[in-house]
Length: 234
Length: 286
Image 1 (cartoon, chains in turn green, red):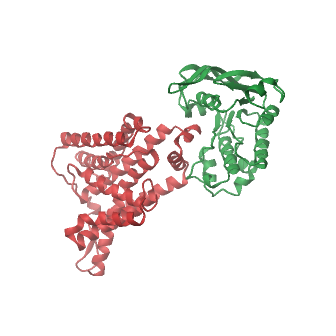
Image 2: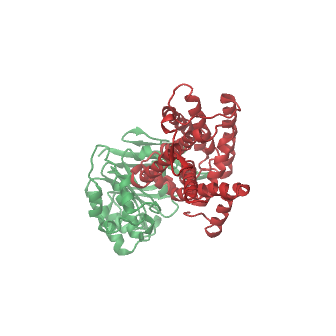
Image 3: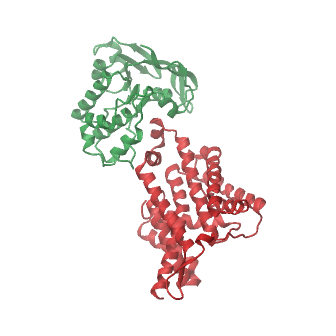
């Protein structure tokens, strides 16, 4: 598998606060990577650094081998990434239908696997709420809409930051089911979530961040792993 | 006041209101979506009028002069957004006010240098220079009706673009959460530049089509800016629908104020604003 996106030696700051300390992180095509760590360890900052939302002071970000360090977020995203941020990023003045229509575009290879109709088949609840404003949906419906909106861009890589946070167990199961089926279609993903047990079964590789540094990057974690107990608190 | 005279005042009020809407819609769009208080918006109204006046010295068609003036106004608007306004998005509103007030001074001085301090006029095109007789003594100018028709058509067009097209959805989404719009792969800088240029074009078009029924002179943008702020505040900052209703209200209030109580005419628009704000402190559609 070829590398789709990679951050090398990333140092990111918020003002004088040094958040990422020389992180190396990469995702290969079709690979599902779980990004783990306690709150404030730099997971979201790493994602934002890769996407150009926050610019790293040192280090390099490449996509398919091309240097995209310092590029605008929209230009990085256009290279095949869909981002579902923590908090879902709903637009208060757009309906469910408009959320999906506004983001629709073919993938970089011209593929249109994810259509409006397919999203509504995947999330039948959304089909019942097409005329509702995004912010008037329940938390679970908002999350489905955020994932659906991301898939409408026919991405090569889907980034999910706390996709199941604050959701009822039943809805959470539904979201995980969809994420599994997305994985089966060959779309790569980076998943940040607190549900470690699900991540262990789902992801091809696990990366643990502690205080802005990678302390584990591999695929042999089990629920009994000492490193999980020490750094995640499982 | 007989019914025909009343009707003529209503038509005048609506025509003025629709014209104000074109200017105010850009102002409210730019503030609502981009969070920018653009005091220089009235300068685009002046620019449209002066460019049309200047172009008419080379071409003999008002329509052609207006068509040529619009892309120039759009380019000026886009450049101002890209070079000056863009750096202020994350800054305080006071910084925006200072910059755009400075732009008013620059526009006004540039106008004096290019076209002098005289007041100019433009003739109504011959094809529209006639009136529809309403009674034996009263008639209504066709050019004013044409202005109303153009403005109403643009209002409908703008509604359709904003509500029904993907571009309109991007604009509304940008007003809600610009970072998320960028995270969907949409070039927000280009989008905001386009919105700013669109606002400049609408204001310039208003100045251009109003020129034959008013005068072209120094400071004309400042007067319309103040009235447009009244419209935007009445309608609710950021609301196109509010700007439309607010503009019609102000158009009618100003027209009837001048007819019924000429001594208090300039007071009438502010009385309407005060009355609306007493009932709806954030405007009609905030």
